[in-house]
Length: 335
Ligand code: BTN
Image 1: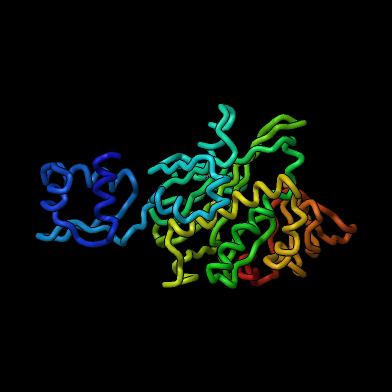
Image 2 (image 1 turned 90 degrees about the vertical axis):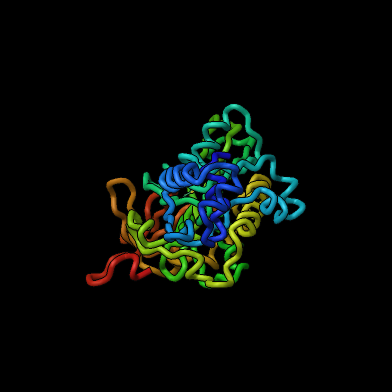
C-alpha cells in the first residue's frame, strides 16, 4: 500500500491528526507527510482540511473497504460460492477488470470492488460517477454453459436481488425501473450494468456490475443528468455499514447467479412485479433512433418489456424506457 493511502487510512476516522503524529506513525518526516498526503488527496479526489497548528482532517469519515469485514459478513453458502475477493484502491472500472480477466480463466464467483473508479461505466454509454471511499462499485463474474442468448432476463433477476437486500435494510420505498434501475422515491440510488461474452452455443461468462450511492456529495454529483439520492439520505442513521452492505450484496448476487443458471428468471418474476415502478403507466421506449409510445403492460416471462401501443402489443428486450412526458412535467418528476 502506498504511503499516501496509509495516511488516508489513518485519517479515515474523520478526526484531526497532527502532522507530527502522522509522521511518527509512519516513521517519516512531517514534510514527507505533507507531500504524500497532498499527492494522495489529489490522486483520489478527496477533500482535505488543514487546520492551522492542529493538523489534517478529511471532510468526513470514510469506512474503507475491508476484506476481513466483508468475508466475515458473508453467510456460509456465500463463502462457498465466493471464489476470489479483489479489493482495489483505484481502477478504471470493476466491470472492465473482470471482463478483461475472464478469458484467462478467472473462476465463477470472482468478486471485484474498488474504492474509486476512474472510468466507471453506466448503461447506454453513460459515465458512472465513482468518487473514492464512500459508495459501492461492485462486480461479480459468473460462468454458464449456455451462450449469451440463453441468459435473457438475468439483468432483471440481478435487480430483484439488490432491491431485496435494500428492502431488508429498511428501504421500504425502493423500486425498479425496467430493466434494473434502482430508484428511491423517484431518484436514482443505484444501477446495474451487465456484460456478457462467449460462444453462441456456450459457454459464456457474465459480469454483473452494481453501483450504489451510499454517500455522494453534491459537488461530486455534478455530472449526473437525473435526480439522484444516496443511502445516507434515504436511511439516515439506520444505514448499514459499507462493508456489511457489500457482504449482503455479494451474498445475494452470488446466490442469484447460481440459481439463475438452474431455474432462470421464473422465481424472480413475482418479486420483480412488486418492485416494478412503471406498472400501469403511459411510457415511451427509446430504441435507437425510434421512439415507441404505449401503455406499460409488465414484463414477459423472459424479461422483455411489454407495451400496448396504438398498433397493438409490442415486446422489447432493450432500450431506454421512461414515463411519457406531459406538457408541463419532466420524465423524472413524474416517475
Ligand atoms: C447504470 O447506468 O444504471 C448502471 C451503472 C453501473 C455502475 C457499476 S459501478 C461497478 C461496475 N463497474 C462499472 O464500470 N460499472 C458498474
